[in-house]
Image (cartoon, rainbow, N blue to C red; front, side, top):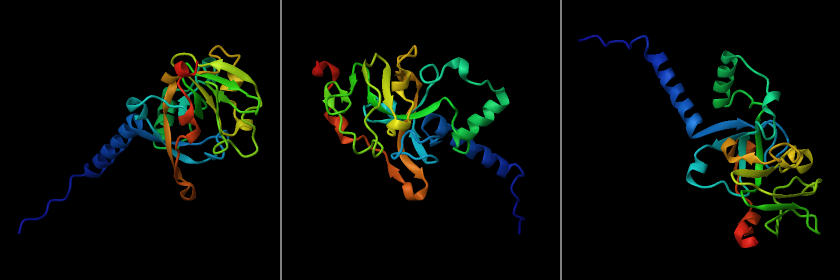
Amino acid sequence: MAKRRSGAWWDLPLTFIIAFGVVLLITTFVARPFSIPSGSMEDTLQVGDRVLVNKITYRLRPIERGDVLVFDGTDSFVEAGDIPKRDPITGAISWLGQSIGVVPPDSTDFVKRVIGVAGDHVVCCDGEGRITVNDFPLDENSYVFAGDAPSDMNFDVVVTEGKLWLLGDHRSNSADSRYHLGDPGGGMVPQSRVVGRVMNVLWPLNRIQSIPIPQTFAQVTAPSAAN
C-alpha cells in the first residue's frame, strides 16, 4: 500500500495568506466593519457598536437623504494641517487593523446622517422648531436623541453641487455640519469623501439591527419641484 503523502509545509501559511487577502479585498471594495467612536449618533448608534459599512451601495444608487454614512472629514470637519503624521509602517498596520475592525477608526473618520443633498435648501428652524428641507418640515422623533431639539443653532443653507449636509442624531452632542459653517467648506462634506453607507449593527448581539432611512425623508420633494 502506498504511503499517504503529507501536505507541504507551506499549505497552512498559504491558506492563511489567501484567506487574509480575500478579507482585505472585501473590506477594501465591498464592505468593512466600523467601530462607532463617539455618542454623536445616539441612540441610533452607540459608542462601541460594530457596524457594517457597505462600500458599493453608492455605485448602484445616489446618496439619499436620511442615509447614515461614514466619511473622511479631512478638509471639511478636520483641517489637513491638524492631522498627525504617521510613519508608513504604523500607517499600514493601522489600515490593516481598521479593515478587519480590530483597530479604532482614524480621527478623521466620522459617522453622521444625511439631511441635505446637492441643491437642497436646509433651514433651522420653522415656527414649530423643526428643520425643513425644501420647505418640508422633517418629523425627526424616530431618530433624534430623546429630549434633544432638532438643533440648538440656526442655519439657512443651500447644499452645493457634489456636497452633503450632515447632522448627528444626538444633536446636543454632535459637532456636525452646523459647527463648521464658518469653515472654508461651509460645513458641507464632499461626496467624494464618503466611505460607505451604514447598513447594520453587527455587535453587540443584543443590538443587531438594520439602519433604514426614516419615512419622513420620502416626503421631501426635489429642489426644482420645491421652488
